[in-house]
Amino acid sequence: MLQVHILTIFPEMFASPFAESIIRRAIDKGTLSISIHDLRKWTKDKHRSVDDKPFGGGPGMVMMVEPIYLAIEEIKAQLNEDPFIIVTGAKGKQFNQQAAEELSKKSSIIIICGRYEGIDQRVVDHIADTEYSIGPYVLTGGELPAMVMTDSISRLLPDVLGNSESLDYESHSAEGVLEAPQYTRPAEFTTADGQIWAVPEILLSGNHQAIDEWRKNQG
Image 1 (cartoon, rainbow, N blue to C red):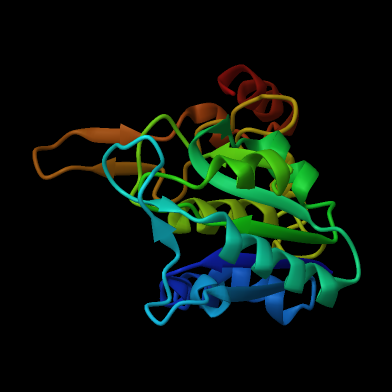
Image 2: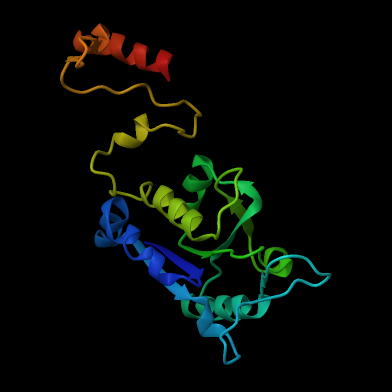
């Protein structure tokens, strides 16, 4: 079973996405466990502060190292092992299918959700194993990247997908081949202005060898 621990200051954001679809199925099958941790639990002041002004000046606030360090140490003690620790951040390397496949083989992962102007660099340098971004754009925080990564990883766990062959045809496989276009009924669809959108005839031929070749060429 893969254990995923997520550190965030907005734990409520995860309730609905993790209660549906593939992730819910993985949890129900016992192949995935997800724990959402409110980072404010490990703060020490009355305001439950998780951020402070950056040294050297500049806009915004930076997430402090101490609450994150304390949270990680407590979670590690409960796990009795060294989990793989991820920080979400715009400066990180881009998360991809290969990364998802590697992470799906881990036994425990901690994802630290960034926020504000970023996280104290000492978290990246001394606590995390890697820093991931999900694309070349800026998000308000790391909660959405944490959801994306968890979804991508969970579908690779054993017996989670309904069709065991689905992974063989998925886009962005380890071989780097994209999925071919997909069609379903009707074979011809007529629009309101009379246009006919037809499915490629090869897919209706019943010639599986020719269909496989077509899919390879289209991928």
